[in-house]
Amino acid sequence: MQIRKIKPFHKDMLIALSKQNFKDESWSNEQLENAIQDDNYICIALLDDDDMLSYLIAVQTLDDINILSIATKKECQKNGYATMLIKWMINLCRQVDKTLSLEVKSKNSVAINLYTNIGFKKIHERKNYYRDGDTALIMFYDFTDKEHLS
Ligand SMILES: CC(C)(COP(=O)(O)OP(=O)(O)OC[C@H]1O[C@@H](n2cnc3c(N)ncnc32)[C@H](O)[C@@H]1OP(=O)(O)O)[C@@H](O)C(=O)NCCC(=O)NCCS
Image 1: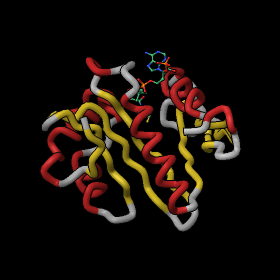
Image 2: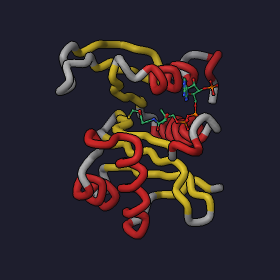
Image 3: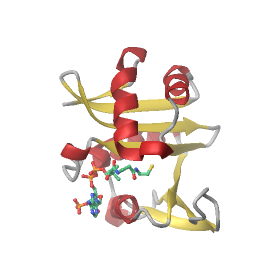
Image 4: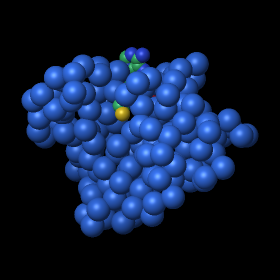
């Protein structure tokens, strides 16, 4: 298994994985294809031979990397794959001296567990942020927390 940058020829696997996990809330095919080709985005995947097990899409600004989407193949979940991708991103942030942030639905307890276990802290809430009325939690990775050194 290897963590690799997602290339245009991976797009069908990326689209399938996004649709499997997000259903009608998935990014469109066009949005996913654009992200792969845009240098402002960082798109990585955990690949097993040619099989995409998990992916992470983030966007970078001058001082922050913001995780926009992360998903693991349903049949491969709970094996630490999403954690591996996030830790890769934490190391990148250390190298380029940027913060690492994300936004998550307050009802998505699985994702909140994942982020909290790794060392993200909630710093803000946006009520009624999503179309279904759910609250958005804004979380930042705490680079000063020694308990969660990655
Ligand atoms: C959230 C998601 C990406 C986690 O992927 P994963 O590869 O299974 O994650 P990991 O194996 O690295 O799990 C790490 C932690 O996440 C939490 N977690 C993962 N699956 C969980 C589950 N089914 N129930 C509760 N907690 C869970 C746990 O805290 C777990 O740590 P532990 O194994 O020590 O208990 C995956 O469940 C998924 O694709 N969900 C649908 C898409 C989504 O909601 N993405 C996030 C919003 S963009």
